[in-house]
Image: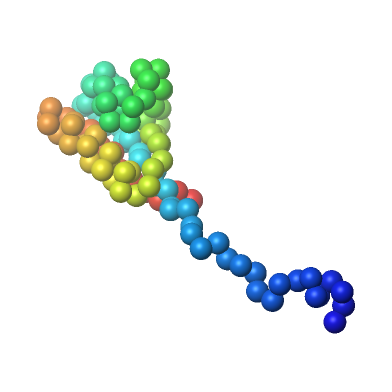
Length: 102
Ligand code: TYC
């Protein structure tokens, strides 16, 4: 046994806790929801600034979808539902979905 082997642990300790997997909330474009309403929902549900909300809305409008933010699974799902429900309440087909990161 060499000197260096004596200094090595037999087993490598694994961290006991893991960071929870994060989920993306995705805003989907549609042809009917007014732009200003999308901005309003982004500010209210996702606490973005007016400028951030405008950028996210325009990206979804031009490319079909845009990642709004990432959260743990429960928070992502409840925010996606809250945003989608808010559109529905006003008769708009506004839609947020979630998907795991990576
Ligand atoms: N495309 C919509 C319109 O022209 C606006 C809109 C943007 C709707 C983004 C949804 O996720 C969306 N009125």
